[in-house]
Length: 77
Image 1 (cartoon, rainbow, N blue to C red):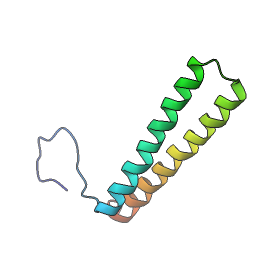
Image 2 (tube, rainbow, N blue to C red; image 1 turned 120 degrees about the horizontal axis):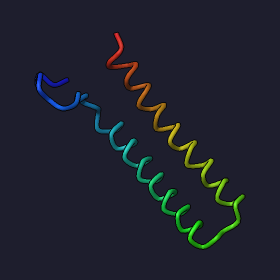
Image 3 (cartoon, one colour; image 1 turned 180 degrees about the vertical axis):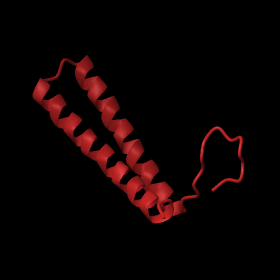
Image 4 (cartoon, helix red, strand yellow; image 1 turned 45 degrees about the vertical axis):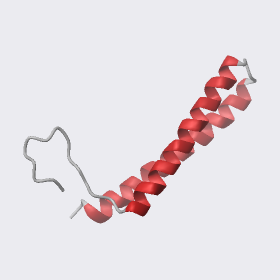
């Protein structure tokens, strides 16, 4: 935690492994989103885009669970 009372946001130190996992997963999600944008540009079949969208949603949910678990372990008393 930070001792700064006037900071614009709260900060929580995370271990390097968790930070690496979160960044890797989010980079993968960014790649999925870019792929879906290209699919829309190419007028790809709606079903194919929906499958990729579901995969990206699941990946976001997975990142959310990691952050929630970290929050429960470190912030919630």
